[in-house]
Length: 90
Image (cartoon, rainbow, N blue to C red; front, side, top):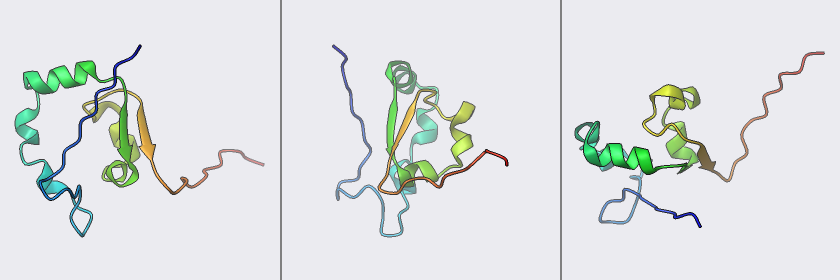
């Protein structure tokens, strides 16, 4: 049976984002975490990432390819379906 580990950053007031939708202050030490033993272990043990639409949209969708720390499947939770992009030509 698989083991699920959940991690989330949230401030003491319980709100993940401020009234403007920004979360910048939640990660003041992110630069210090890069290449730390803690972060390397988290990356190694992560098999998938689940995030909300707003978090996903903080970066360009293609920016997650190759530059996001967790190079694993990303599942984006949303109430709004993405715009359909048709690649068919007539």
